[in-house]
Image (cartoon, rainbow, N blue to C red):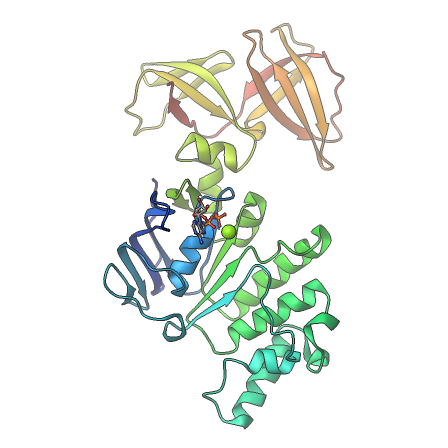
Amino acid sequence: MTNEPTHDKPIVLELKKITCSYDSGKPAVHEISFTANKGDIICLLGPSGCGKTTTLRAIAGFESVIEGTVLLDGNPVADETLHVPPEERRVGMVFQDYALFPHLCVNDNVSFGLCHLSSDDRRHRVEEMLALTGLSELGQRYPHELSGGQQQRVALARALAPQPVLLLLDEPFSNLDPDMTYKMRGELHQLLKNTQTTAILVTHDHEEAFTMADKVAVLHQGRLEQFASPETIYHLPASRFVAEFVGQADFIPGEIQNQVVTTEIGKLPIPKDYQGHHKVLVMIRPDDIELCINATQGAKIETRQFRGSENLYGIRLPSGHLIHSSAPSTQCHKLNTPVEVKIIATHTVLFEQT
Ligand code: ADP
Ligand code: MG
């Protein structure tokens, strides 16, 4: 696992090796550790069943931890023996299905967690939250009278109204259509940054994690594979699983000699700290490869996927390995065109051959 140095903003959330288990035996979440600093958006990313929701629920207090510690604002709220109940953790949650109260209008949904305030303060806070989420005109409506995007904004306003120290969001866009998802991602990002809200957002979509997150925690089978910035996750994945989960990745064999790895498509410097075996697999991303036409090298274009702003080419190398290369969509080449491939990566990512 790669850990990057954190900045000097105060730590809001700290997970220290937390393990959670349902009755079934095998832990759903195993020794997960990461921190969230004030104002950070952390995305928990991974495939279905990897433990994202369980981790979020353990932070909120809806699940207990059987080992490890959850700290909020420096105070332990859960460990093997301690379990501070959810309502005492000052954590706001936006559920996957929003979980609005169907029999309450928008105003009453948003003021639900504010009974500790005087009625004037409560009305003022609700007005503020509705203005923040663009719902000022809709306070009297009921949830069934709202679109999916509007319902999501109500859920967000309700979660933010009690001024939580931390906001948790479980797949907040999964009930929206793609157009709305893009719009709401932008809106949510801006709102969280404007209000300097510290947030943990669960998603299985790496593009969503990359556009939203300051740091991404990649989970796989209940374990944390990597916790790093989106750029590091993409360019320097800590494992093959991470490499393949966050984008197109090809792996070609290479052999290390004198600090250089030799592959079928060229030589590359090896990372300074690499100490593994001399037989390796080199990760190649489509943006690491440049194509030159009219070559005699023996590689050929085998596939082309048009992706709007770019073409993704599949190149069959003489050895039989397939690698991919992205090029602007203005560069359109026919299938079977012979090409020379050139590596333009700025760093080399190696995994041991198994
Ligand atoms: P994700 O949110 O990443 O899809 P979850 O945290 O929901 O994953 O689930 C992690 C693991 O725990 C899965 O194997 C899932 O089947 C199991 N699990 C989740 N909820 C329960 C439950 N209430 N009872 C038993 N097992 C559960
Ligand atoms: Mg889930």
